[in-house]
Image (cartoon, rainbow, N blue to C red; front, side, top):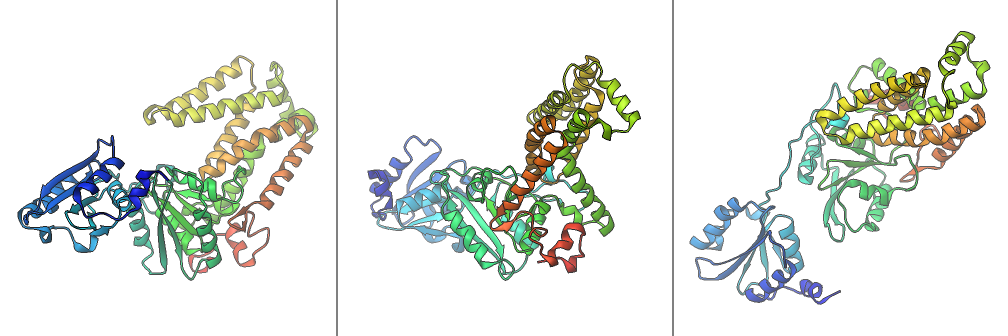
Length: 468
């Protein structure tokens, strides 16, 4: 610990010049930190320190500085309930960096902070990545207080506990652990608090920084926490006994523990009629499997098991492939990599041209590749169906796992046929069986079987009969 850091931990001296020198040393070369010296109406020397971009200077002038200079300290027009005191330079520094205005008076060993925040926040608009036909239209923002209010608006009970702490050695990011007392397992709350206490990340700029450091298995391609921008999703999960971690500076809230089946469920499942919800849920399960296995099955069957294909269809595939110079495995790799590149390009390009470039690029590349005899038309159909299947997965992080595993399973299919595909499935199932999300088995409630929760996997239960 250097001399400057030690000095920050000492109490304020009460000598305005000394305290100002200490703060100026900390904020050296910080052009956005303003030191304003003045005298109050009672001729007491005073110092106001604030950050230009975070503090509302108009309110500061109107509600604090002018009354102090004309009447006295009792005239500050800020509600006393929101005013806080600081006793050390380190507390003062933290308050200033959070957007509060610090007031120091000659002879006082206690500083006063006024919460005059002026942070640029966007409106609570509907999340683009989690749109729904029916349901709430508001979404989390980058402001933690705003996000907490959206959550509290939905769960109006003191059983909703919100524990806020500061993490990150340099970023000093505020995070909040939310859970429902009486519903969640107290041991789960203790476990997540222990993991948060042991965070090794020095700077927290997004919730992903925390997710990577507290999950059970960091190297697994399958997400072990849900990241969502929807307050209704967080509220429903809290009421089911899970916890949520809200991070200041990002709209993405983390939810755990989760299972594979919760990753494939959409909030809209509970906003529609039962039969439609069940149909869409089963369709989602089917296409989730297709997004991982369809190219591999095509490669295996066309390479090693042609006898499984009906004669007419086999002749059609053979005719389409007669001028293709590559085996089916290489052909599949070419198209899958091209599709992934187009998908990534569509995301990175400006929104106005991103979708147009990805669609036009797919059409042009597919048509040109078929005309040039590089890939066959059936392979383009297979890749297109696989891409559509991956888009049906409600959670973007869950689709990443299928996109990554698709390639090694294709290699197994190209070398061992359907035996390789089955080997890949077995390895994936073994991994999923060993995976845990904060102690909860990833394949729960099927493996191990939990009788009162299995219904929510195959069938959407009524709201009054949901498992908890």
